[in-house]
Figure (tube, rainbow, N blue to C red):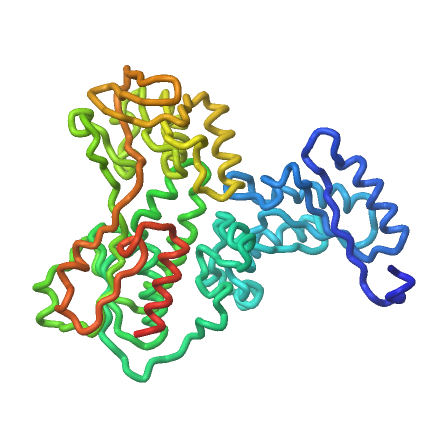
Length: 434
């Protein structure tokens, strides 16, 4: 390669410091490889990790500590004189700067953090750290990339650069937004930036919606970085916030808003199974917001999708003896593969009883009747039951407002229960349209 490109063209080699599999490369061997590469004319070494078999760690999600591969870069740097590049869940410029200051690497590579905010370097240089859109390491970008296009849960403009371009409106409107979750707040941010007069109504006393609850299970605290970012943005833009106040039709008459955007989210779904009411079953929302001692020691979680599995993780972390029942063949099948790997591993390590291919037929006080391939049987002895069997759109306000305002839009889970990525996208989409 050197003979082809000449002496002044940089050749950077990326290599795995550790492949994290039995029989794979370890750092001791990679150090020797690094010295050979330097001798043969490499100008810099980019130290990553893993191979196909350890791919669950290759794009470290929020279950993995930040800067997970930095120690590998540091080890290589101790062996060579050429620049070494560090990578691996380095989410913000403060951490990146510290890695270089500490002499652990000469440069820092960021992937997902720049997908979340490609303007991060400029914002950091100008000291605008609170304006940086934070990557939450959810790996939705990796998941969508495999389908042919990159999307980001915290930045709807990623992959949609041709569609979204902030244009100031020439017809400022009174815009009311009902719901202070991520979709509603994104709509508020963009609408205010375009010059509209924006008011957000949130019936709770805090912004964030159900995404605040989503940040409660272990290792998911990082989701609040995005919640806090959106809250800073709407407060900084002078948007009127009506917290602890639920919108009613009577409030429309004196003000007469031009546009109402309904972003009221979703409600937990309760199936009509026999014995549901008698069982005293609670929703995931209740389980994540109650004090641990109020729930009881032995808990049955019905529904082993991502939400149910994360709730089981939370409850077991609180010292509960948890049984998780899922009708499909595996749990957390709706999650990105990296998240599913670590979540399944955590539940196994903590001794959560997992019953897959098991369908609940009936609930009662302290018991459930489940059917699997072998038989219908009763499992009992539970102090509490948590239902994690989906959500339904909270479109009550939307139905009431139909025909009562000039422009009415329903976004996010209020339209159809999905995830934050879709809610944030629709929030910006509508704000660009009005």
